[in-house]
Length: 146
Image (cartoon, rainbow, N blue to C red; front, side, top):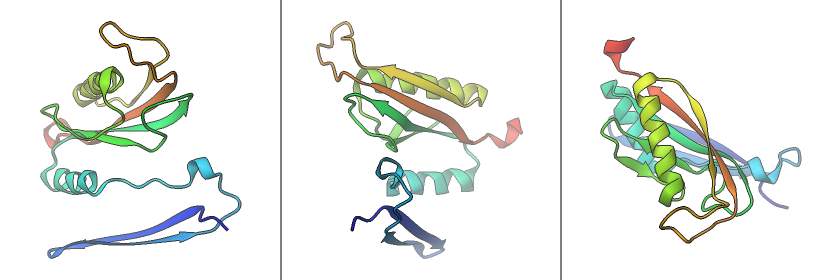
C-alpha cells in the first residue's frame, strides 16, 4: 500500500508555528497530484506578508512534460524587491518566470508562463528537454492599491 494523500493541520500562535502531517491511502487520487508541500521558509514569508500587507508573488510549477529541473508543485516566492525564496529549477527558465512574476507584482494579474527547455539558449549548452508550465499569482496586494 502506498500513501497517496496528505492531510495537514497547521496552527500558529504568539509562540510559533506548529504543524502535524499524516499520510493516508486513497486509491482515487492519481500519484502525480498527490502531494504538495510548501517549504517552511515560503510559509513563514507568507505569514509575514499577511501581517505587513506587503505584496508577494508565488510561482508554482503546475505541469511538466519531458525532463525538467523540478516537478509539478515546486514553488518559488518573489518579494517586491525581486529577491526570491525557493526555486523552480534555476537558470534561464527561472529567470523567465522571475520576469513574469515581476510583471504580476506590477499589474496584479495572474499568468501562466510556459518555459520551453527543449532548445539550448545562447551561452547555455544544457538542455533538459522538457517543458514547464508555471502559474504565477500575487497573493497579497498593497493596501494602498485596494
